[in-house]
Image (cartoon, rainbow, N blue to C red):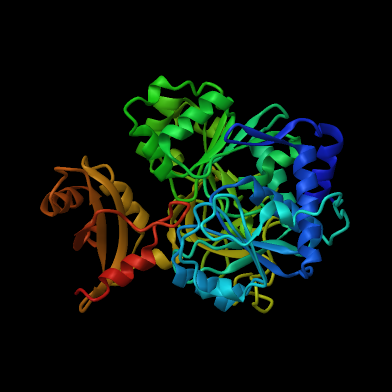
Length: 511
């Protein structure tokens, strides 16, 4: 079957001298990337690492991260990247208490305090510009090494850290087969040509090995890396590199739209901008289309499905003015080759009436089948038929469009009534002066839980009384926030998802 490492070898043969990766005006060809990846894989083996050993990666986006994924696919080692935004205690819990890597690659952007786990690593490798230095990365690469094309495609080659929005992150074991399947789905939904350029500016620690990083591989296209996202740098890179494809999360999109001189940049090369990681508010999507054109393609997925599941296709979305509001708020329909069902508590598919709520379940070659260190079944994460429990609740309308209403753990049950937090958030975001909002449930002696809105206001934004009055004109009784908390910013993970567990902990002691 097709594997990551075989695709890489194929590109050396047919696109060897073409640019594969670009960063800071430095270019690496497919032949160079493959040689460096082979050298890394062999170099790790020469220093004692064996197939199955984990290699931690803590770095801003860097070409070495792509080389590391390819090296893992060739050598059998398993790459485990994480966000540079994690605290030392979080790194200790994930690496020291969970993954226990034998080696670590530390790059620019890694926190100065990494935690005690790093002291237990037998090999520490430092990328240029990293605070923590060990063996220089280039010295680790064995010259003249060749790729091993015969690794078992069903063994993990990278571990994707789950988002941790509802609890401690787990490590999804992503195999080459999972990644290859996801890449095929991604390219089917977002046609990519050999001469195209894909901009990576979201953290490469997110869903490593999946479409978010490697999908240009299948067409020999060019990947352009930015160490991290910043609005001006993003637009400059799109203009200078003639970017055709990229990924934006809602927070990134909002930052681009807030730039006063955004229209001075030439972004006419863009053909497909995936928006996802969290639901995209309809007003934000409409504004983005008005400014940047009909290039946005909302997608829904997760680490365990290597970022693919559903897509709101162009024909179902554009022109925006002609589409029903409910459709623009939906996650679309299953991506190519994806088996998806929305089921009730009894395991029966819900009625496609746009109101019956059930859990999204997924099946396909892109879905992982295990978490690191957990027994088969992953604590009930898969059904007996092999469907994965996403924990996301949704409805299906008569035309088959899927609308995500909430995370299973984010539903607020107030006085016996289920309240979807996303619905309340969407309403509050339509109030001028509300910049950001997250809705959670907090304890109440009588109602068990009450809807609590945690809001970020613009300067001179609405008062809590004004927010309350507005909510009462837009929402039915149980959905009206009984508490409104004002904060400077919402806690988010590296991909922009709100960490509601932190908000629950912060406001748990208030009645």
